[in-house]
Length: 425
Image (cartoon, rainbow, N blue to C red; front, side):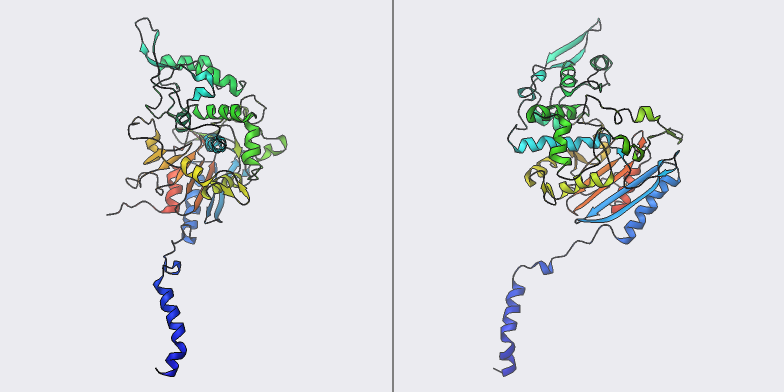
């Protein structure tokens, strides 16, 4: 063999062996979602909502693969006070409180405190022997029947418990009379009053949004032996350094609190009176609801979202095990649960433990865009967050606008990030 060939033969053999093995060197790395062009597109989109007067102020924060890739804010946190929206603005997150409560509950699940299919009454006897509304008789008296099965803890995590709303007049009157969500009630009083109202449907039959997550908060108190807000602080907010997330805003921070705006059908923005908008968060109330009531900042809520995309941890803080995050972000609604209130308006989604879970791509470009496997929720003042595990992306969008997202801000924000959805041919 020629001498130069002999000299390089070991190198050739090593190279041949290396290329014959599976190698990440040749694995295609997904392109980043938030490019410079996407950032410009998000800027233009969000700015258009404040320039047009569709909302007073808006801000957004996005992390991708562990790094901040987008932040900006437009318009005003307080239009009348000429105070701009920024990343330190405190907002009412309303139902974005729910996923926080779900995480708190599942920390107790990890400790073996309950199983998802345990009867709720095992831990909260108020909910034993529930009756279900069947109709009214000729005299206007309620016709009730025993629930076919007990409410389970899974039911209260996926909104299938059957708690009554205001759609049926006879039940609506009882809901108002019970006044379970009065902020002067403790969680224990709330649960007792809620349990006194007949169910609207048999547990497991339908998906219907309601006070189920407030019952989760009550369960956290019962199982942990701690007041719910203290449990949140010690188990989630403290470890994640979420120093701006709370029910009661201290006086020194109230200058950072955003105003709340109502948009009329003709497009006029009117400030909701502060005494009404701020009533829950500027006074110490007995009720610490699990379904609403928290205030937060972009950065605080992003810490919560990043913990979830990291499968339960952020930095040195481990809040949940990866398997628990996977359980929470898996669809728990079977196809037999066909009545789903307004959930289909969120897109082709199911529901896990306090999150909507995207199960299919959008059917068309008019649906909210997103990636299969993402999980998300939003709030009454048109706030939104989601976790996209496939792209390791988390997004938080804040504004303070009621009624909920009549201006299609959420769809526009999603389209700005992912592009307008084009069905595959």
